[in-house]
Amino acid sequence: MRPSGREVDQIRKLNIELSYLDHVPGSVLISMGSTKVLCTASIEASVPGFLRGTGQGWLTAEYGMLPAATNTRNDREASRGKQTGRTIEIQRLIGRSLRAMLQLEKLGEKTITVDCDVLQADGGTRTASITGGAVALCVALKDIGLEEAMQGLVSAVSVGMYQGQAVLDLDYAEDSNAETDMNVVQLNGSGFIEIQGTAEGRAFSAADLDSMLSVAQKGMTEIFEYQEAVISKLT
Image (tube, rainbow, N blue to C red; front, top):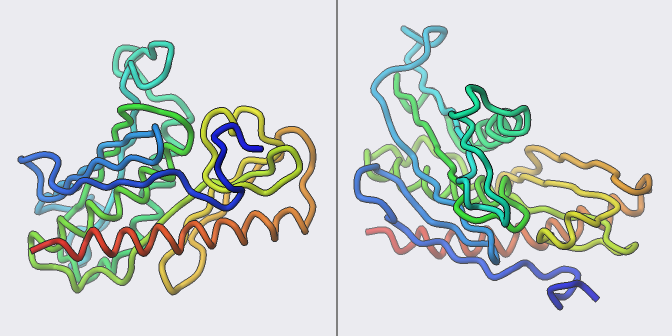
């Protein structure tokens, strides 16, 4: 029995609220169970130096957790003077994942920055950031009339081995006690973008890996359907 009472292949309740903020072209608040992330997509008419004169655009991502996102207060990384290795790794993952949605040459020399701010954490913050960030990116591209630069949606979900069973969309109670923790990112219709898996308690077998990827695929299919339903509401 999972602590939440969910079935092994059941995602948490998913909700994406569009146009959460007024001053950016793309913004959503995504909730995966108790995990809540504010995702915004901002656009600048410039590119990093290595892309100047190429006609190609760029996408980058930033990630952070508010001090009250967990049950013990986290110091702001700005007050420490540097980002943690975890933060850097997560925002690079988000950037790689969302760039896979784009044909960068169709952006022109523009940079899109996707900011993912965790308001409340209960496991799966990086996967929620990717899923929500993909929708925010889609909204921003529509706002500037560049939907043709998008080649598909991206979604992400966590899976793991918990008490010997492959389970989908881990919350903190499971994540902190899982034998294996894995994050899976997929471009709809085009296969996997990234698979990050780590054995925490015991090594996982090829059969375990197949089971985890199977439940991940089921979860991402459901997430894609939800993303598309939300995006269809755009006018």
